[in-house]
Image 1 (cartoon, rainbow, N blue to C red):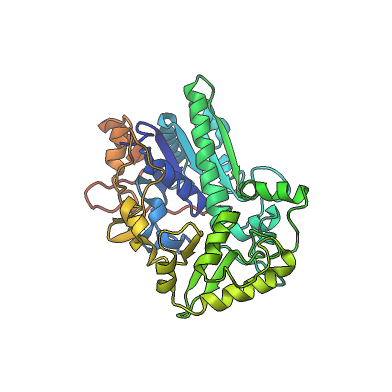
Image 2: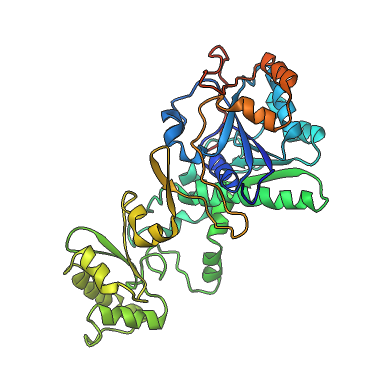
Length: 402
């Protein structure tokens, strides 16, 4: 069920952006088999804590393989031959060394879309180096614009590189390549690099820089907390409200709701008057609680909203009305998005344990009982009834760039 129903995706175990991109495909109905190691490593983040909390791993089924063994590589190639998409997140060259690189894969399956998720990309002087989200967005230029004036760059969680500039970019590239195949084109490699995805997210700022409407000094512009009408303000109970009153008519409503319409304040775009505006906003917001300000701005177009915690957000009326958050295995998490009117996404299932539901998945991919038995002889670990995969399979070294 879902807009990608019938699309088969083979994912190689990883962390961060690759699983997130694959989660988006799975949420939209793609049939995903993940090739896992047989034993979890402690450096796999939430995944190492078990499938219940591995939210970006939801919606898959799992098999286990020791890809250092030639027979296991042969089994992986059998899976690749039946897949529409392969997703991997190792450093450049790792899949080639395993005998599973795109040249081999595309020879076996000419219509295959081979998605590669890295930080620096498949080429260039940094391609072989390790890195993480913060490093990628630093070299993309984007991190330089995030933070207060006179202060150091602020870490924006790992959303800009890993997820927005990484996993979403990968998913979009895979979908575009799939569309090309369906139009009669050939399979190909999708080289998704977080450093480039992060730069793309900042595209508007290069335009503003070129026209002189953006200053390189952090925290002095109208979208980086420099403008008092685009910032956060503390309330009397230690919470915060956001203000994003960019347009003149919304700004006028903000001033009116704050009780400052007759305060003789400087004009909205008078940069010299911004310190005075900010001081006035700080004083007024600090006079009431967050809940009281929510009441003041209820139904308003002043572009004001409370800063909610992760635990609070799912209970907001907007999310409740749309069902934006769901519960899977007792864990509250964001539901599938975007929404499709004709082919709605199904409620996702927990991430699989290692090898879980692998037998059923192989059957759905067209492997008969004899073929499944052969794959097991080649080292494929399966479980369908609560039986753990063979614990004797040795693990593969995670050779990952993210």
